[in-house]
Image (cartoon, rainbow, N blue to C red):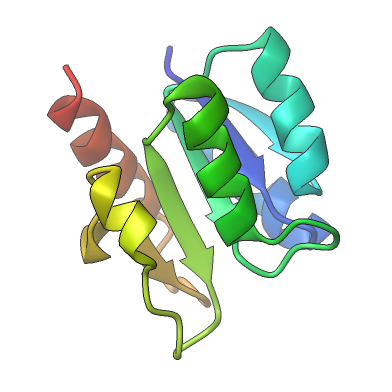
Length: 124
């Protein structure tokens, strides 16, 4: 069962996504801040991390860069409401692409399952 970490400060989004993904056969964990997510990464190994960009404290970009630096982890799905977001060069250097981005609001939750499965398949 793939382990996922959902990093989003909006409780309703984080919980709904967690419930949906658990129903789809994943083992979701939740964090409301980047700092909490980094602590969880010390104790758990995740197959994929879903990250909101606008977080209190460290933002999603800082979190992703730090998670890569500390753990060489690069299986992220960026979940953002920002239409202006452009991936920084560091993300491309990690092997990420526009395929790693999902715009909020997501109308069909199955898009998450498809993205996660595609991402996991790419790293087998």
